[in-house]
Image 1 (tube, rainbow, N blue to C red):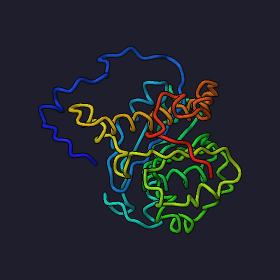
Image 2: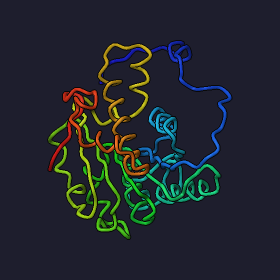
Image 3: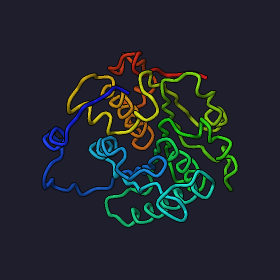
Image 4: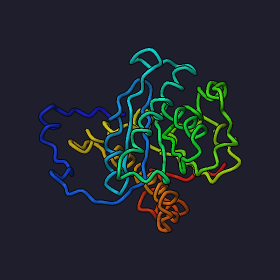
Length: 261
């Protein structure tokens, strides 16, 4: 990661795209659950969540916490604690008049992807699952297989996986195990694992010393939105994005590339 020197004043004076007292739209929208990484707050990827919300989704999240306290534990009890938190907030979302409960998607980053995978296996109403550099493909693949109810055959909804630049980190064992669904795999060719979080892109956009964070994070958000638009809204243009080359979608192949395995 580049060294980005940003002051508190830089942050407070940065422009935002929020609209004060925006008029509500009275119709139902698909809902997306976000699961943050190990012991991280619900707003870890606020930029992506706001981006998805601005394109017609109800986006909800809960902090990553363990079974017995705020600190997440790296075990099956920790995974299930986050799964149950997602189930709780989804139960609350079902009571919101703007939520279309027939169109549900999830995405998680790093450790949080473990919870979204198990959540989908327990809740087949999830129609689309996205993972941002998720632990399912790395050192925790052997752990998730020990969770009660783990069964890749139950994951039948479309799957999107976005991985970091390190080509020797994974052979994508979980991705390969999915035989019953449409799946998409992309590599972010300039991002390290931690750079899948909003604050690096946010700082870079305030005081740009390089564009690789903002360009790459923009690609991550764009492909995630296209994925959910394709499978939660049946949007034909979005489906083409998932088939196009990077350049056809407005990105350099040095930023994001589709992988075939």
